[in-house]
Image (cartoon, rainbow, N blue to C red; front, side, top):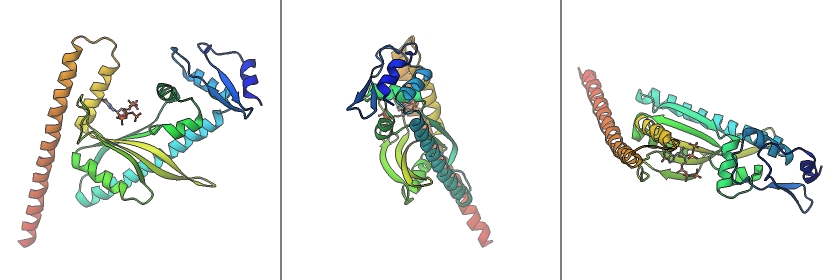
Length: 263
Ligand code: 0O2
């Protein structure tokens, strides 16, 4: 079916008067020009996907990302169990995972001036599937990163170390984009997953800072920004001191084990 004709036949949903579809060279490939100025809703996205015949492809892509999330989560849980057994402590406290919402996907492509299409999502976005791994200690973050990188089916596509090089506002985390295979009925497909590793304290800071970003009017904003930056430095000092305390406890545990073996 000619999608251009179909789109003309269908009533345009509320707030979508700017939508424009084109059938390039009669290939049935339809592009949607991003809506200017208007906020897009989930219903609008569904409508665009339907009009351009991409709804099923989009759902399949999201299912692939969901499978990739499950795959990486399992890898992390295996590492957690192994370290827990060998070192008698868990390298991470919790994992949160999320699939980016269609509206956020649309907005991100729009921000980058890339037409909204299933192909462009897969080619251009690296954070549709995301996992946040919350660790107690900084060295556990690098330990898990190294163990993941050593796995022969994991490809590290990008690493941004905001712990070694914090953002000017004080944000600290280790970000990885990895590719992992998902095994489908007919093929093996590599999918990108974004991983954010941070300590409990860094996560606390990020959640407070995130809240501030979405507030429209804040009194004394400059002061709060500065307070946040100073707090981020304190949190970093605290994280490193906690790690030293843990090392001393572990050392003394090892010493007392050795002593008791000699008695
Ligand atoms: P959401 O809703 O959390 O997903 P890119 O994703 O590469 O296009 P960028 O900014 O270069 O964009 O990527 P980067 O630096 O790796 O950051 C991606 C994500 O890290 C953000 O996702 C946030 O989740 C988190 N993040 C980065 N900087 C900050 C910060 O200063 N404060 C807080 N609280 N979180 C941050 P999104 O897409 O912004 O949103």
